[in-house]
Length: 289
Length: 246
Image (cartoon, rainbow over all chains, first blue to last red; front, side, top):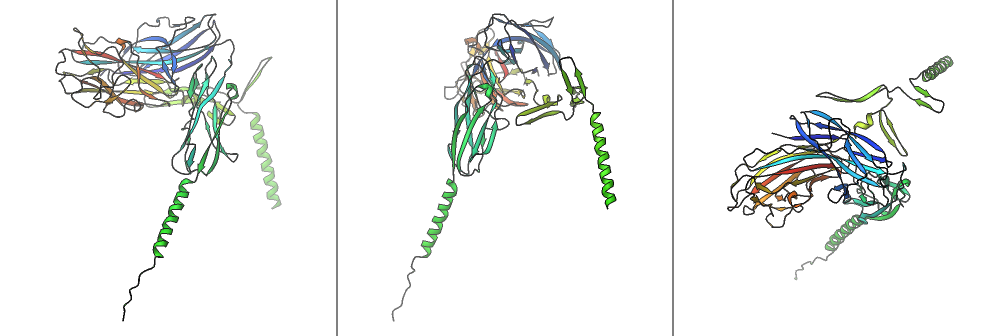
């Protein structure tokens, strides 16, 4: 049974380079299957799609000022090569930016894909083909720390008013990048009540690409707090690292003792009902002489 | 009693001195140039990842307390050990590349399956996209089995729908497992493959927003032909594209 089983390492590379600079990035391609495989390589530009880290290859435009080639002496991009069963091949990608490359970000994927076999089957047949990619995030800048502008947007708490029990409170929002260069989210959500920190969420270091937004996610957990919670007014502060030049975002939510009050009302009602039932005058029958 | 206290005090002093002397002879290293002085707290001799068929060993020889230590305000990354828990590369496998449907019988659905498996611990999740080179097509005469529109007649390459009726014809697929619930409600839901021959773009069929290891889903390919389907051998290819979330 023919299979496809490839590993590519690293799965993503991020560089800041000056115009006119040439970089080398080595990729290890591992064929984990028990048969040899004929592969090929290509580089495709992409643009971000949605706000969860997906990409779109169809509307992306190739930057002619950035050139890619393989530094391997026996291989070019687009040239088929074979990796034996359970073996590894290193490909060294050369990235060259021309001196007149504009100062901005460029996003690419270095793809390794299976060469399509010629089908010899005489049956009704579908052939599956595998393709695996490693992203390249290239910032072309003349400084090591390009200026970043960001903003916390669409931050929401659900629900804003909640019972002390039943169901979590979730936090959602996006970080918008208003600059020409990508950055990593570095920040936290702090929940306080009466100036005491109740919970602090560290945000995942997701990349936010230029002039794009990325959903906020929390490290190792959902951005949510679970009941029971004491009744009161809770303050929520979303803050990003000062280097990201974003204003912190402040909001709040309320916890009310709805279910305990309902429970007490129910108990009071039952007691009241029982008392009323017991206090009804009983008719005593009297026998006339 | 006083003698005991005196002896204890002397022993304490001796131990303190020994510790002091030992700290003066710790295995540190210093590099000096006219402009810089670099003090190393220990000798890092070797480090890396060693594997055999049964074991994987990562080591940092010489490093005191290797690993990553985080606290508010700082992170210490000692040795190389901290790298290995996060630097697992992107892996993608397809269990069976040759999907043979055999002879097709009108109004009786024919299915085959394979499994997609992915690991992406380094990044922030993954997308697996799929696209067909063209609909199932005969080699010589260019007759095609149309892509399914499901029982409701509305499913497409981006909308799935229930396909259980034997009178609904076409070719479609379902994916069931990790990362597929956004695209297929359950195993009765099918959709079409995107078609490269009419410039459609590859569509995501499996996706997660967290690092994963060996997450898999079973893809079921289904053909149901009508009685008027021209005879022939129908074939196409499906390209599965696995990329990490950036």
